[in-house]
Length: 146
Image (cartoon, rainbow, N blue to C red):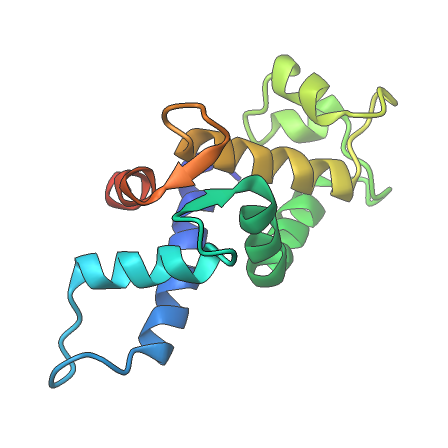
């Protein structure tokens, strides 16, 4: 799964939630900015006006774990529940990315390592200023970049 498609999944998941929960729209119109603010506020569980990795991780694990599991299953050609570099490479993973994902240095990536690496990559791409938080302007930038 590449970063753009993963971020699109995040956006669609949050957008679906926002649409289902939208009670402030006038005659069914939805303002894009209001929807992004609602999405951001939903993820920002501690109301700090920033999303830290733990909030992001909790949201993603609740909403998109099935997509990560499906991507992992599709990549795992020999069905051993581990990804070799060759299997990961079919999805354009570089050796550097594979080594970063292989946290236990076993030479394979399991589902937990795959999910952790994918979510960290997504979070880091949204954290434009690299302060370990995603604020509303960064969130809007990522959402409108798609």
